[in-house]
Amino acid sequence: MNPEHKLLLDESKRFSDELTKRFNENDLAWTKRLSDRDSVWEQQLSDLQTTQDVRLSALEKAVGATESWLSEIEGTMDDIKLEMKKLNNHFSRSPLENPTAAPGFCCQTLYQVALLLHVLAIEVGSWFQ
Image 1 (cartoon, helix red, strand yellow):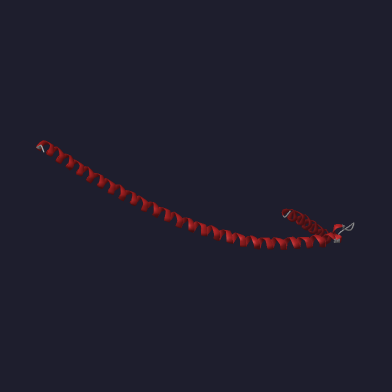
Image 2 (cartoon, rainbow, N blue to C red):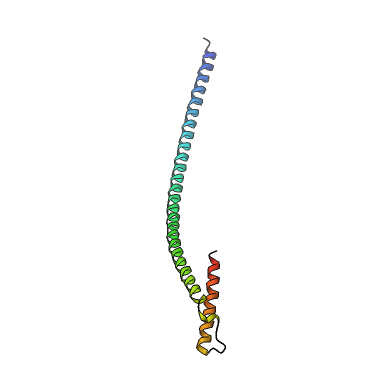
């Protein structure tokens, strides 16, 4: 073989080996960079999931407290409705709706209270319809 050709072949082999080495180094660098990025994303996703779980449990706790409060309020409102219905029934049969011709101070005051309670019962009753 001609020494010039041998020199060219050796040079091309050395160049090819150098390119292969650089490609392998770049491939390793990209692999490391992508794996580092994957681990960062996994950590961020894990942190996000933990934060979301904490928020969800706090929300569930608040909803539970609201539901228990709502049932207590509904019971209280049912009691108030019943009492107002009893007052309506009592005062509808009361002689205070038809006062005498010349009521005294005490009768006039009781009549005004009865009318006020009657109007209040109607107003509170309209809230629930």
